Image (cartoon, rainbow, N blue to C red; front, side, top):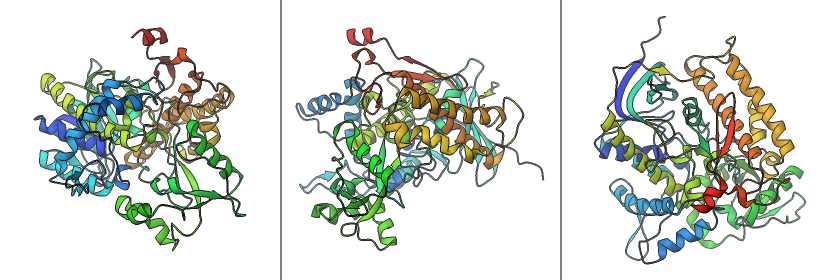
Length: 531
């Protein structure tokens, strides 16, 4: 049977991704008058971590002093790596953008005669964003995973290519500008909604020369029942016990230097840990189904009363989904270091607003919304200036998993995944880092990478899966390299051999490269202090 001809399309702006940031980027670009095409590896409205959660946005009214105080409070927690101007932008943009969803999302009342905008339910939110995008004129191609970017001869991005899962056809899109909004990388930890978050966009961006930042700040976990990842809201009220009924000494979640996570991780390494939520406040018991409906289903399936019965728990690694690392942003329009390429949401570094910390749900949701809108608007303006250049020859930029350096074969990637996970979301590697451990993980990850880079080649859906594993290996390599280079402890990055924070290293750390990974400070510490 002959292979079907590739699907070929063109657009002013191509959005790669299907979550919150991607949808907001598409809406903004379309409202700016651009012809917008959005491709997602899943179905826009259900794919990604937002669709399973209940995002609460950073919501601060424009009242005298309130926003300034909120920014200062957050900046003090950023370990000197955030920027106040970006914080002000996401507060203002979020305040103006969310009410625009009123025609698509059933916002609840605030109990004072007004509307409660900041907290939304993920499933309805994503469905609303899909309808909003379609109404704005965005063309959505579901189940169209992107495999690689395309380049003009001058090195600027010309579009992307991928594979349509349901049609089983290759596709190519030429565009004047491309927005990467593919989310972070959770390393197949089982985190709810994250199976597709394998770092694809970071790999594609790196292949065309983009630089990443903050990858060492990729240490975060969510607590869930051991058999099913859920959202974490209920567990703020939990006490913990071993199987003999002895209560464990676990500090509260907001304790400094990840004391909560470290205590739980140590206890889990020693044996099963049981959570007890019987002391949870009545407001949580009565409101959880409304706020996070997906959190209750795993308990009901097993006939467990969440607020009465003790149950085993587990920490699910969140990688760069809640960690801050991602593609470096070099301009006010979320431009990357590569011409025609923009980044948004968890694909972009969140250090600009969170510094060396995760930022937490509210700040992260506001970042996804705002960076998406900014990137979409800037990409549309850029495409309007430069045009699509659709009649010029382009180069396919994909490497690992598509064009092997040596003899081609389909490697068994299942062997490499545990090595990648151990280096990134393994408790010991993430919560108790040291130079010796990081060097061992670096060598092990590099071996996985070399196998895929030298021999990996697949076609069709197998190529999609192989590229996902290649992206996870690349992300692991960048995380370990950055953690080794940051020779101190700062925020989420915790080195037991360098427990102190070094003022001389108060600079964001860049990392890039595939076969040869390099790191360097974004700017010298002396310049940072003088700025």
